[in-house]
Structure formats: structure tokens, C-alpha cells
Amino acid sequence: MARVIRARDVDAVLGHGFDPSDYDPRTGWDPGYRVAQDGRRQVNVFHDGAGEEAGLDAYTAELRAHGYHVVPDQMPGGGRRRLHITKP
Image (cartoon, rainbow, N blue to C red; front, side):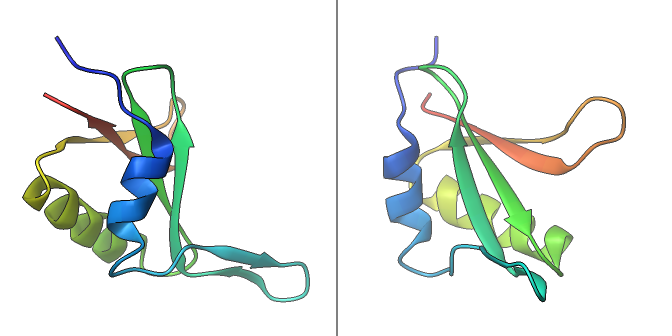
């Protein structure tokens, strides 16, 4: 069974090598990651801006290297791609 995980811990891992996303109302999203808590045992990671596939692949490798379990997913109805992050 997965253990409790916090978005801030995942953010701390990604923050050492990647830039978080930032939204500018005039130019749109600057490329980067964004984390969102999804219950006590899961965190979702998104890539905003250009380079979604490459960004998610890089985040997957980094998080797995830190011992997290990563499952690629897509939001229902053909929505955005994301990563489900848990602790084994």
C-alpha cells in the first residue's frame, strides 16, 4: 500500500533541477512543472507550456531516481497528460 506523500516534498525534488511553471496573462505559460496534491497518498505533476512530453519524461527519471513510484496518466476525456506520484 502506498504511503502518505506531500506535494511540497515532490516540489523540493523537482525544484533542484527544473523550473516551476509561471503564467503571464500576456504571453501564456512559461514552460515548467507544477505539482498538485491529490489525496493523502498521491501527488500529480504537470508540465505547462511547450515541451510537455520531454518535460514529463525528465521529471519521471528524476523522481524515480529519488525513490518515488511514477505512473504516466492522462486526464479523463483526452485531457492533459500528467504523472501520478506515490511512495512505494
